[in-house]
Image 1: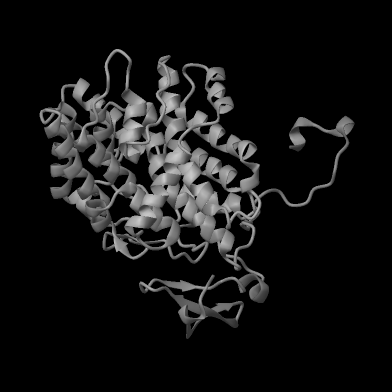
Image 2 (image 1 turned 45 degrees about the horizontal axis):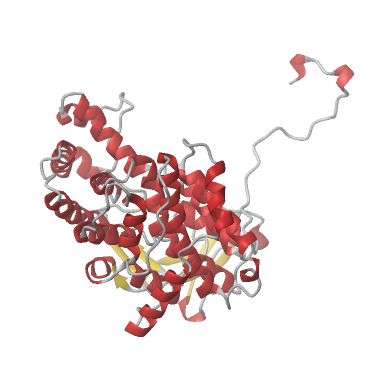
Length: 440
């Protein structure tokens, strides 16, 4: 809901066909400015055209502040650097959902709910048997989350009263679904969650525990995974979050809205970038490791090759998350005696050159969050087809928080963008007997 204190006395003048109209100016709590155009069409008969919504604010939100020019990312007012350094993923999830960091008692209760809801209904477990072995984990994740409403229909009524239970159930079960989908793809027995493990340790154990080779939880890996999930927790109105809000605006239940967000995240232009980084580094390594050749190719306007993991649609300076992930990457590879990883060496060389090269500096092509995250996942043992699933695990609390905020906002209207029609003008209907090929 737009608080009146953010609507300034200043008006924006717009002149169309010699007539001047006045639209309100809105300034957010961090100084962001917007022109409120909700009355534009009613006053002028015109709409705005903004492909990709590059300059269009779809809502007012209290969840995340992002300044792409200064490289700032805050969750509920807290710097991402502080949260990644001092918090667990579950603390940050609680912050995103409730608007404040939990006390010890609140965090313990939240953890108890996650432990309570970690198991899947056994009928849902049998669903995994019906997927082909090569089914993509994102396909499984989306459909399984969508089916949760059939098992817990009572949660759909009075959703804001049940939001804590729904959020806890989703956060806990999505982790289990993700791990189960991986195990099924290998044909390995399922590993059920344990009540004595933390959120991230539980996930890694469900992924890698084996009857013939017990998995030992590595605290360095757990810490790195914890940071990765925190850094992906929310990122303002991105494609998948906007999808969750758009679907939810039709008063669709939380489970179906999250399922839609997962499908949006599956797109290679959104959630698949870290996989593309690994594939690019592997390609350079297999071709002899001559990264300089690929730098030149990226700068050649006639070459379609692009360096993946550099630049961001919003950030015009360093992505603040990339520095945190880089340190976590160094810690993981060092602890696992993989500091000489050839892909990491190529990644560091690419980063060093790009940060000094005027071509990349002028275009603000700095390393982004995807550049190092895939290397960490690879070192931990998570396969590339699970990278986007890991993204979804991290982004889930942000999706839920936005759905909750959207549902509770009296200003919410069902999403219904306008368009400018560019097709043929009205034509006379011709019966099928009289139609000719040349008339098209």
